[in-house]
Length: 580
Image (cartoon, rainbow, N blue to C red; front, side, top):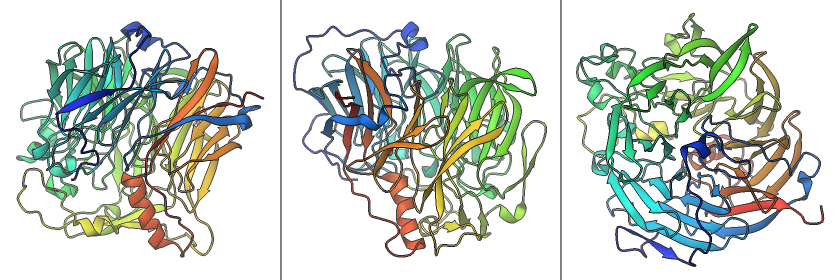
């Protein structure tokens, strides 16, 4: 794919706009485990993955006075999905094409910019980056050409870079690194190219490999009995998203992608550890616990989002929990342990789901064979292959006790496979013709398209009661909105085709504020404080699967109901109007 920023000829460099007068505050394990309220030090704000800010200057009463205070055009198109990361007034934002830009967080003054020179022959199936990691005095980014790059946080200079996968064989990375215990932990994507997934930890100071754990076991390893023949060699199990972490037990939790190729008859068996959560010992990377959300995946329901670490009550008992809104359309409540094993607590559909016929007492689903596709077997199933929720992260607010889900309702898929040819390194190896995938979206048979259709839904769930507390429907639009919730009683989200960034009342679901941005928002919002002032920041920039779904909806709904969404990335930073 042609590079969008040809101005950099070397392997990567930093463009310095101004020297730092400020001394950088090193990011330590202690700070990551107990972050200051005014900082946003990692992908979801804390190791538990809550997407929660303890700042409360912006409230349900004054959010209507929220105004943009600065913006910055990134200069690239496609899906801008990364959160603005803030450490003591210094902001770091990554973009598609593997830029990292450093700013004064309160003013938007550019401090430095790093642009990676990507290979001319690189094909980007998912041209995006989901954020940087901070540790010590460095900023870390995983790249679409299969590297991890460490940058000096003050200057942007490259300190080290380590190759973690061969892009010519289909390996790439888009996730935000998990930084903990002296390690930079990332995973590889590429399941659609026939790769075997893995998670790798690098030494934070040197970039040397500390450990590497495959998500598909080889013969003789635990779980290998769930694969037949040589299918494990190309079994998928990609890692798209940052893991969450328990610093007390030093266990990391990662979600894993679908098995490859897509059709289940090409890889008989349960196919561990695909479509699962895996618990990893941070010291050596060993898998010490897992739960597989669905076995022998047939629907491209990657379960790549790591479960949130949330303690909740269930049947009168306190549970040290893991909670995950599955792409398979089920809300999963699990229990974690200090030793690693994960146990099933409860599961129920949160959107329309017609594949599972039930769950056993260990959470293993049974399937309707008429809703299970295969080679030369085309079926219709719900939710669609994009799932009840795709990669956009959920959020949890400890003040309301509610768990928030950005979901898709009323969408199904019609899908079937074709006979496979031999794998060619770096070529798509899915087993489903591309034109079939790109025309697979369907509305549920009950949907009447003569009137607005509820598609996107922001849901709030009471985990202790196991009940939906409230929901808000978005009509006629895809909804790819990562969530931010705050102590001020708010939920922020974008994700819709009208380009709006919105604030909801976290208790009731009422819309309290909205603002139109330049493009659609698929960026992860964050909140931070500088000199006693609270800010909310987000990237706007539509692309990747949100645009693919929008284009399909445009064909499925009457003319004029689905607008075009402009391309182009902009960082937006909001604060209360001074008059408020």
